[in-house]
Length: 320
Image (cartoon, rainbow, N blue to C red; front, side, top):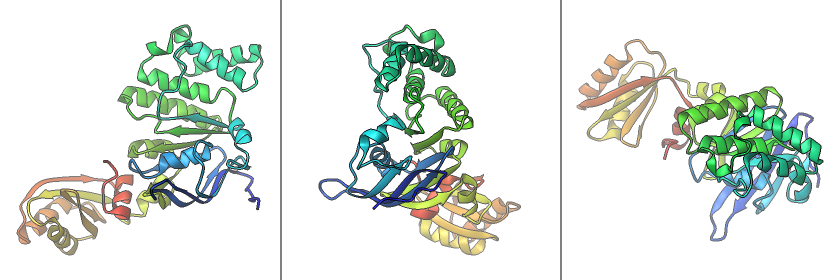
């Protein structure tokens, strides 16, 4: 059976499932559709199935069942053809340490069928684009973590793939390097590059992604733009309360007694309260807690975030 791929659809999965030996179900019936030119994110904690999903889409992991298409190509039935239309930046550094920075790009181009002249031109252009022109002759071991990550992205797009896959692209990077990579990904996006990235950083997903899927335990929990997902909470103020005692009872008291309360739940060692409206919320929380016999030790107020969405869906924080 062949799939009918929409004109603007670049990635499609149908009931995509991966069960590892021992029975671990890493991905469980995942249905996704990624449109041409968008940055699409898979957001979830470590162990949620994000990397396994990316692995199946990039031919590195064989699905247990279901189908996956990239650029209309069945990645299981035609893995060689699929590899020609994708670029992959894995979590680990896979640069060739025996080559210089420039040579890593040049030989990647040659491997994908470029002639020598085109490969040289593309390597020079990518070094300029990724702010590495002054590092071309250096060994890759001389690069910082952020520079090495930029070089891996540059290498991944050398052969101009239809779709770029990034697995936790900024994990372990310092804030400055993270921002530099975000800027480059923004440039690629403006040029029309389709990108699928996995991340457990809420800010990264919020800043970069046109749409994102929140996943946990291999299942799709929510799908939409960051704004749509945050609006789905039905609240415009999030109050996080720390106190001693039975936090489930405190959550119930706040839910009942704070005006505009939409939802309240114990999350780790706090109570997260979702409220419609901001005015007078802090005095209301203190008053409700005190009247219920609780002593509040800390309180913070914020806007709804992707973390809030994840808490609503799973009852736990996204961070691990």
